[in-house]
Length: 134
Image (tube, rainbow, N blue to C red; front, side, top):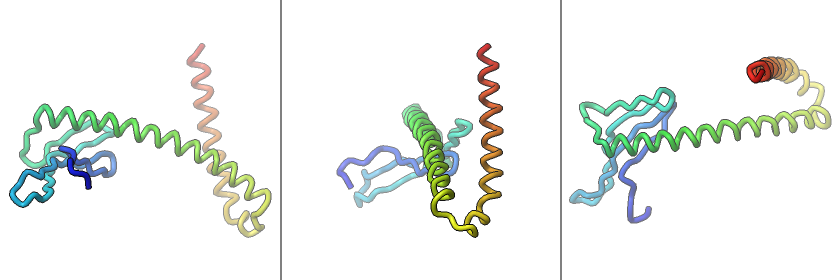
């Protein structure tokens, strides 16, 4: 570990994080992490842990982290979609060139239903975008 630790640590969890204040200024020079809040990225909620009152500095750092985290998650979402396109292409190549009859039998219905569902949603959304522009 480096010599300088951050003042806050964010333990990522589903839909948010637990927020800890990092303290090394104690007699044993141990790292102590004191939970100060729980945050929910989805609804923007910041709940102080226990009977704590968060300072303006705490809130500012938490809100900055939430904004940074939202950007990371948005980037991951679109990256996952680009990967899905790659996987669809790789799946097409696999089905055409390497898949056995048994393998195709195992996945064909699930793939066809998923692709039909995706196509329906994409077509509907595209139509909505086109009609909202006029």
